[in-house]
Image (cartoon, rainbow, N blue to C red):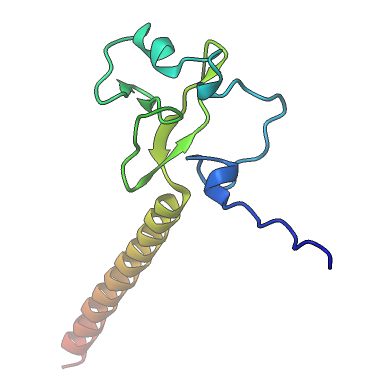
Length: 130
């Protein structure tokens, strides 16, 4: 009998800690465990690390190594001196949810203001008639 097909690796094994929709990289980057790219050493050059992370203007740096992103964030590729250190930013799911909430809120506000204007106009018409 033929051997069973190999089990498919989980998505987290294929692209560890990277956000949804990441395209394959054109040129392979040195992984943090290969010894050629020490994420924490690269980040220490820029400032002090807190919980293995460097908090910068662009977000928490170092999530491709031991820095953990928050539950609402995903780790995206961020290059520092040729090393992929990773940066935590809002995940795609959170961004879509926030966009949906804003659209619903704006639609609701528009409908409420239109109903208020319509009610005032009807009251003005009733006063003029009576």
